[in-house]
Image (cartoon, rainbow over all chains, first blue to last red; front, side, top):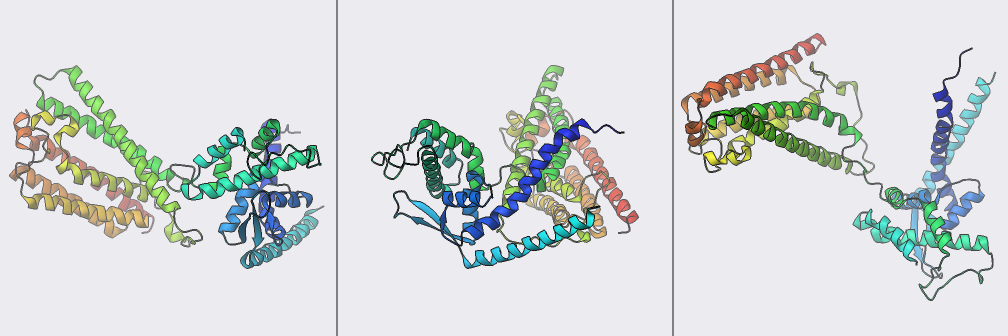
Length: 122
Length: 334
């Protein structure tokens, strides 16, 4: 029986972490768009996502929100009525259309993967 | 807000483009404040007990230093946070041009090195009497190192500028659809046609500047008071002819760069213009005093004696290289 290559064994956890990160990265945009159907400021959104089981770091989320704002998928507005000024993000019409498309794609991918998993399971 | 946070935010701000700075700084401050507040509430859910000092900085918490340090460390280094926000290129030369850049370096540096070594060796031998080996080596090597550093710097700068210009195109602009017609043509030397073209363009620019370069550039300014190498009294027609032929070669090189392919027409044109240029320079050297008169007087050997053979050797080399490309293309069915 062949001995597994130690370097492959050592690289496996790194590879898993990398691929998990890739899979999650694609979901965060959709999750942000969906959660911002109701106006949210950054940290509240972070908590909303965490409660929904979607883990995202603050240093990833805030720049992402800014990019989605620049792309016209979210609209941002500073609220100065509270003790501390906070920037609230809301889904735009364009963002809503993108979210619908992404969700459709997500569901289709889930169905495809489920079928593939069933077909390839001995 | 505390000095620690100010230092962190300042460090992020310094790494951001001016246009984004104020907005992002406000966001980062709000983010840190929210994270600190969440931590304080997690430790003690009673807001009255939380150490909030609104009088110090209205609306901002006066945080526990340990909590503040933990929040900042959770955010990561200011460099990485600024990078996430700015998303500007973090490289001098990106992957699109890096291979061509490396190739241009490996082509240009030896070429320029050899030419400078030979030219400065010749210039020293022909103008210094008596010639001493130490002086000859010191001069030639010193100038070659200087020329190599200059070429390296200029090439790097040009590629960096091209890279910035290309990456600065409007977002969302769809790139031209790739077809097999754009498959890279590999020159017999192993280089790409586009790489060859870029190197040719750079060399042609240097050659075009040659009549204007003062002798001080090669540290022999004392021979003619820093005037150009070329005789300033040479007829304008000779200069125009020289630059026109160079422009012809540059146009062919530009076509190669743009299309990344050579064609039978461009290969024949290259050979034709090469021969025309060599003949033009030969006639000029034989009938005119091309070099500055003071340099001619200081030289032990007439310029045309060594320059004309050198010109024809370089031309022959170029023609052979073009013919090899032609043969390879013919074999490939072009």
